Length: 111
Image 1 (cartoon, rainbow, N blue to C red):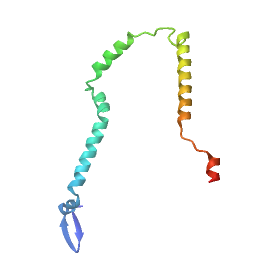
Image 2 (tube, rainbow, N blue to C red; image 1 turned 90 degrees about the vertical axis):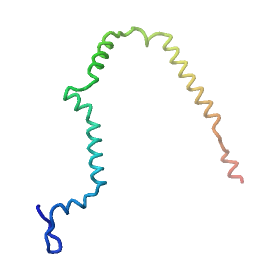
Image 3 (spheres, one colour; image 1 turned 120 degrees about the vertical axis):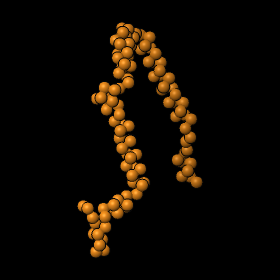
Image 4 (cartoon, rainbow, N blue to C red; image 1 turned 30 degrees about the horizontal axis):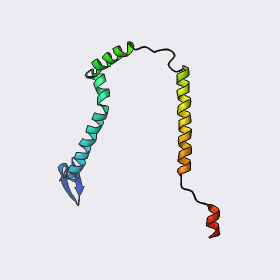
């Protein structure tokens, strides 16, 4: 579309672009920056330029040296501590319920 017809005369195509406001262009550039910023980790991995690859290898090496200590969750002390926590929770809920403000419905009807 080399030209646009308006009111019987021909205008150059450059006039058409004047209606695109600078704000629209700024918003378009900002949207492009947001998309590139959001996709950057994936793009960096695909391009092989991710700076965290050495860090992830070191972390994997450290994690491979970890070991699980058997009997941590099935010890009687652990069960007793869990029961104590449950009792503390129940007591806390009862205290909170006792502190709630209440009203007597029968007293309100008598008024």
